[in-house]
Image (cartoon, rainbow, N blue to C red):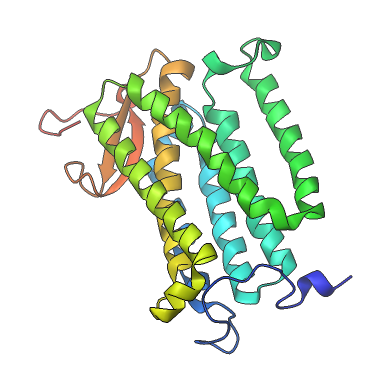
Length: 269
């Protein structure tokens, strides 16, 4: 019964050599690259404080769950244990669930939910609970199943970007899509062409996947937070801004509400 907790009990092993850098950490770079999941979400919680207060406090659940993903992924890559793999994959599954509950556009709700987000959320949570049980029973299919969940999220982001009138939001969406494609490319190359990258002495594409998929994931959450204001709070106007400088679009994006900020005429919004 304790075997899932043992080091190396997971059937999944990534391209990076095991214990090649540290005698106590199986995949050092894959473990260390998760630090971004732990450092940036607290900053996002601070930047989204007005959004959480006046639009949807659930946005902070997304940031908290991303921290859980980072901690779980770090534990998995440090130990390569089966329980670490399950924690990693299930944390990602619950991030998807939270995102769909909060951001899935009402106009696409099936009629059975009668445009009621609470009913839709209950259905999503119950479905995720069932999926969690199935994931425990068949852990080997989890990674590929989770990859497919990106496709509808990406599709809805494209649809919403076509509807937006903000050039700044559109540019952020294009960057998000490009980084997501780059992340998936790294994941597939590490999984399918490991021998090639070992010959090139660069078995660290999965570590790059962690960095790129975090950037793509939190950027997508920022975009959907912006889009959802129109549907959930039509009397308010969302504003996409960047930290630490609003005129530097490669900074950290966040959303605030026009009703609750003092607009500086010299600031580009």
